[in-house]
Image 1: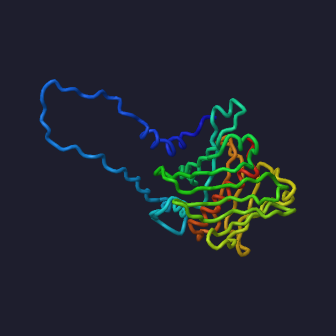
Image 2: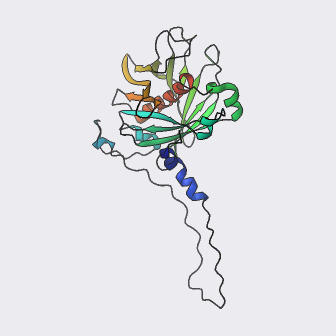
Image 3: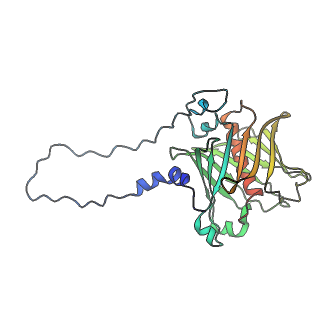
Length: 279
């Protein structure tokens, strides 16, 4: 399938406008001319302001009208987000594995972020889904809202823990998603980036832990803290889109934007660890 138009509009429109050149020929005057104004430099480009979120008007949340101050604040008003992978035509027709692209959508189907992987062709060829990479998430103003950094992890029997770091511009470590090897089920911990203390625990399906990383295509992960369910992640087939999507449901409406961003990073790690079919 062709790359989703929402990604093109969200991620590449600004670059296309910058890349466009003025091909008009210079004007040549035959006679003398009078200078009526002094030349001035072009004004400095100011980033577009973040739009005001009005999701609270149509979704049942505890807040109304929120002005997001940073890119990941767009997650504050949402009860759920849905991650859809887009596919390049060249990858569908050949065996060449390209960098993955995703669209993060709201429950209403609006594109919130465009996610773009950055990795080397050698790592994609040699290590498949275990490859190290950086995932850049751009918001509607074409500014980077979040950065996910995944370290190299070979497989289930590898002693090196599989983890993913969540960063915010201009280089602040928000937290980590760290794998905890178990024999019964996949288990991960979401840690604070400053203190290193665990915030949430993620538990996957039973009987699929340390030795088996081949989960069913439709799987469910629970995210809890202090014995209470705070959120969940699942991977399901969407018949209307003819593809699988990774979905996050925020059960606790009091979750902060930081907590929601860390859970979003965990969902991307689950996507690569368990549901990548292109190795």
